[in-house]
Length: 239
Length: 239
DNA sequence: CGCGCGCTTGACTGTGGTCAATCGAGGTGG
DNA sequence: CCACCTCGATTGACCACAGTCAAGCGCGCG
Image (cartoon, rainbow over all chains, first blue to last red; front, side, top):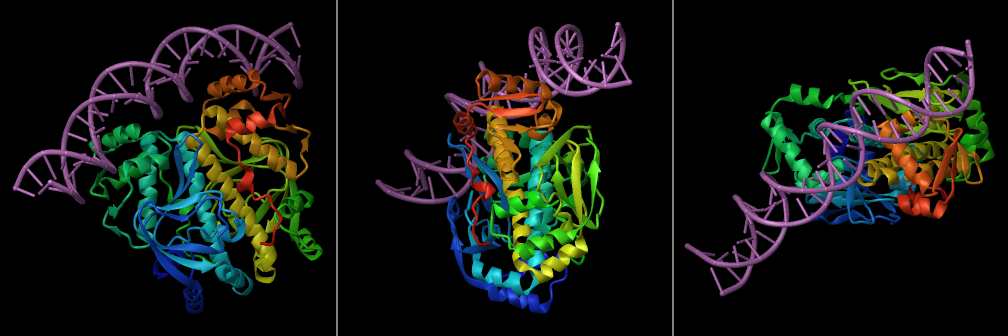
């Protein structure tokens, strides 16, 4: 159940056998969610945090005019709303973008981990810090990158993150979002997204067929996106 | 030196006398920075974290074409780059937007806090989670709010945050950024920022004179911004 | 008094949004 | 097996918001 989470954590630091066992013991139950089903609802005060075992999920916020902005994409191995452990009230919702397998960890158990295992606590803290670093990168992309570069950057990021949890095959990965959903990630209209995608395809940078994205020219895509993976902290060192 | 930090922490949970003393003892030294001086440089691996005692600072990233995006604004009492404690390598720079008084805390000392005082550790963790929540709100603002509403939202947020650390006077607060810098926060051009500010002024929502912003119509500003302070977690409860 | 920085304004341009129609694949009922 | 329906992808026409360029203003400082 926690294999992907371990791959995730182990991309940043060593996780002892004991810590792995402790993590395993934290799971209180698990559940499957259908596409478009809310995993956590805005405004709720859950007594547990959710760990994404498999699938794609998104944090989102609706505006009063009915438009939606997705503020984060989560993949297998992400401790999706570890935040709620300390933030208490959800200021946004989390929705399944594909069929999702989710495991639950009680906040009370997270609290006792924080009391008894400082190293593991720091690793969990780190996960939330990386979420923050990703947020900052998205802010940069939204503010100062062209839409074309913004899309390219997102593809680069997803590819690197999926690689960590072994969800890539060569330069391809499964990507279950619709164009409308991707537009909500990028903060642009679906029409403009579609037209920009045409350009990326025409230039031979990527293909997106049948829920599968393939990077056709990684160096050029990375250059276009000005992608620098430093912010993902993919280095194993003591934390 | 840590009065503002305490006000900050105490807006989320009770901080014991002992914890206050511990925090005080963490400061290893302090320094003043001039406007436009880098407090932390991109790519560095500092062995300490910086606490903003007084002033305004900004996280930023430069694009290859020379444009800049500011990803966060920090005010007195913010534990500015607590992140570096676990992220290790700075993926962005931090610059003084006004004369800044900064205190330093060694990472080694933060580590021992994380080993010995779980509750204080959780409070520090919470500070970084709130940073993340603010980032998400900025993403929403950049993606789905009009520029007018985006500015309004930022003013609402700054006002509430400054109120916590007693840096407001009525509905006014000191705001030392230039329009160019504010444009880099919002991810828009200075010309468009200027024109949008005219509208906000003309509509009697706010004034900005002499580095002082005054909110002239708080209810209408809040409505325009669709501002909901939930994400700032301004509730005292056990964490 | 002149210079420079930050603010303001106008003219022009282009990126990206809205509206609306069409296409195409997969699913369902007759 | 086929007609029909629905959802997502695609395209074109049109338009508005926001960017660029460039000039002018006004205050503070040397």
